[in-house]
Image (cartoon, helix red, strand yellow):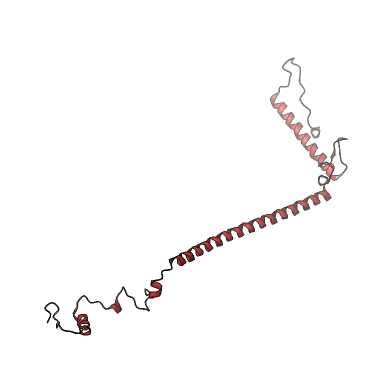
Length: 182
């Protein structure tokens, strides 16, 4: 008998293996080991996959996937830019159509849309208003502006000047009042 293990010295290898399992306190069953997972476990990997040494192909696949992802992002950005540009040109076209419609409306209604005509209903050669509704409207507008200017002149003169001429002492006449005050 072996003094260290307590087993008979002359045992066959299978007998020795069985006896070691039952008596060795440090023996681990390989089937339940953490380092060797069972095939149905999530940690299991087959020997073929475990020792796959084609790293160049794996790296190439990874680079191709990354390149494809970048190209997809570039294409998406490019499509967005194209769509923005198409929308911009459509808007420009709509604005041009609207401006042409406005010009046609002005040509039919107002004189300032027509060619070789002044923009206002006033003849600069004869210095007279046109005998149209637009001419009358312009005459009324100009008369109102003249009256406002005369009232402003009268008010400024009344507040800034005295009733006599300071150089010779003679009485002084102010600017005329607008016609509607008479």
